[in-house]
Amino acid sequence: MSLLFTGHYVRHGLPFNLWWWGLTFPLGVFTARTNFLYAALKVPLLGGFAIAFFLLLATFWALVATRTIWSLLPVRRLQISAAD
Image (cartoon, one colour):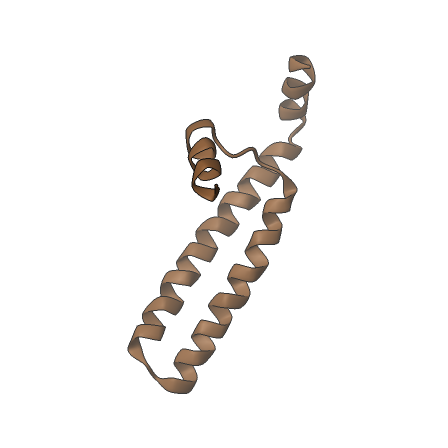
């Protein structure tokens, strides 16, 4: 069932809403804990994962921030109002 939903949103796009910010927190915590484990255990693989998760978090954060700012622009709100 989840594959059907994923396929649908890949084809039609995932509509943006401010709830996307809720996804950044768990990813940030996961990134921080992975980095903590790397510091404690000194396992190089964990260091690589921590870097990869940080890059993913930074990319996702930038995407959500950009989409949030875009959705707040007055021009964008006028376009949405005109479409209704």
